[in-house]
Length: 327
Image (cartoon, rainbow, N blue to C red):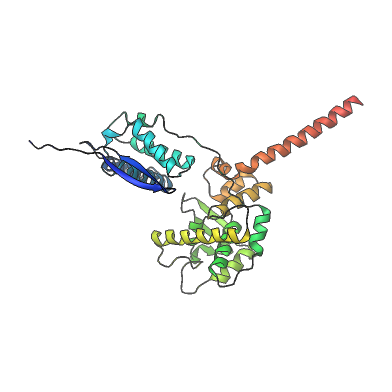
């Protein structure tokens, strides 16, 4: 008889200069969760969008970093999920991201045939949402950014121009700016499909946008902007990281009240459009959203101000009517 022994192991990692220990789940014979989950993702490929599948893979990778590649389906329990959530919090992961991980993993396990009770492991996990920090730029910050004196050929000037182009082009995401090809510009319009949702978007090229396009046009490249050469996702990830680093530097140089990231341009356009009384359905279509509920996550931060203003006007009108009745 062959006896197989499975041991606990301890990983030590540092956070904020302190040493912590992390328990790696004791492995038992059974179905490896990585195999079961990977099979579930393959089966869902035809019925799920790219962004949803990406969320599944990201959540799975995070869980396996916590529990280990050999974690079996039989070992997943409420306790394991709760420990994973606590570990994520200690890593500084935001609650909304944790919620996304939990919902993604729960959705995956609901399509496994190994254990019908696996969903119960997520009964106590956080799957809600919390209010996110404001991401849009104020008018004052935007003015500071536009008037910053930067050398013409500097990476910071290029980063600022790409950021402004993102705003001008209806909040075009950086990934779509990076992969934007010259053939997608025709008759004064940009026509593209959002990389994330595959929703079609049509943008009229205004003069302020055309000037930025002309400034960086390269005859030997199929892309509108010199961000990518090979067009690989690895190259894009490196470009996005560099872009965000430069945006952070611009935030510091301009002493902006809001730190710039690649997402801020998109949120800024949505907020400015909403403040200018552009109809919500128009904003939703411009952003390439499938419905207006998604759009509201971009502009909810200023919605409360609108409510306050509307209520103030209403109370003034009521006060006038009361005075008229008294007289």
